[in-house]
Length: 383
Image 1: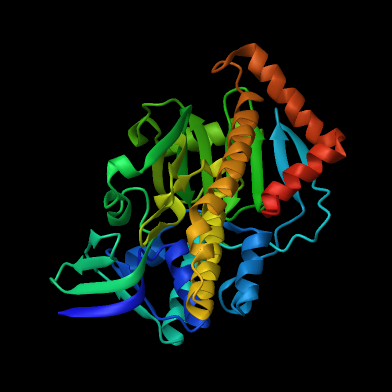
Image 2: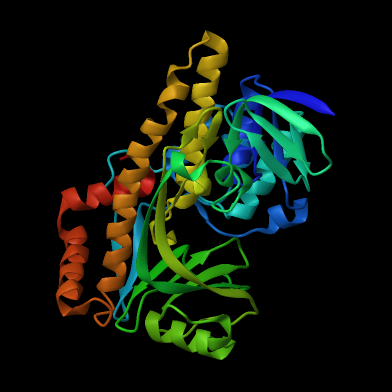
């Protein structure tokens, strides 16, 4: 069997579902194909903040009230420096409009709205990309979907990235040299965000809804989940936060994650355009991964609308170059912020010199309006 869809979206993560909803609102037919089942997709927990720019992208298409929930993002960051509270008020010139919204909540809302509006969403769809220059995918049942374009939204190990010949793509990567133990626990967050800078290493707590928190603990490369029994996790968090954990709820999952950055260039190959983790990865300390994926979806939707309504491919032709300029800008921010919050606490990894430089960088945020505003612009997605 063979069918045709103008836009074939592979992957029902944030970028794929956002793009599908954006196109549907603009009257452009598409299909979203996801190899996992619905339950897995709706339970997958990662990011938790939709920044100002991403919120505005949903508003632009009349979707903000339907998909963006959660408390407003505060105009500041809470730090615990050597056991002492430091609140950094961000002096941004524009009003912050971001939301604390767990990724699984955003995904569920995007799925609901897409289906309510008549979108074609298929779970359990095994996809092989047969041609990227004349876009065509084959499903596990042997059927074929041909399209004008393929949007690769299926992550760093997905079918769309694998379909690009190695001689047509350049991989740029950076390994930070340490890992985070990523912990999901049934513990309500006392604060929406708390970042601890401590000589034993970085730690953080982020709210993930009213009853859950995501904790992060800097740990050596090579550590396994078995190296971190629950009691050790709670003890180390209390040491780095400098206070007892008010509630020790069940730990639902824990997994070491080496910190890395990655950019693939170009992001367009014939009729295939890559989005989100399929094209770039930033460390979670910057809180930009999900938001960069949403920027990609917004930009590609604008380019496709321009193409179909005006028969003008100029925005599509410029998609890769335009997005890569911004991706590298936010990679620069992510690298600086990640190194600063780690080096400012831990002098053992890169030495006393880098430790003191990071402390100076950190203190500058409190005394320099220029440095403070720049940080605020990056956090809001407005730089």
